[in-house]
Length: 134
Image: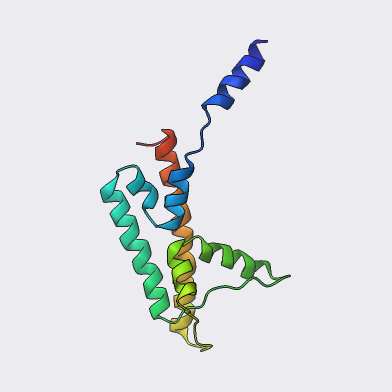
């Protein structure tokens, strides 16, 4: 009986802060803004947005979902993690010119890394929301 009660207590304590997670995904630093951590949120928004826009400026391309090509598919997931930056660029018709240039290749990596850094920001906002980090 005691083990079952402990399991129920731990299940009740786990509450997923959905608002924080969605805000953190949509806007880099948004989860921190949601929790009134203005300085950290501003730094994250500025740095990730700068990296994203530098990637666009260098002519980087977004990855595409290609059946059978796991690298392209995972790259697409990384790009989508940029949230509204990615969705806005796609909505306004950004499409990289098919140019074989080192700058465009770096731009592609900048776009991908911006999304992956936003994943770390989402995890950081989650840790703060559940009390694992101050």
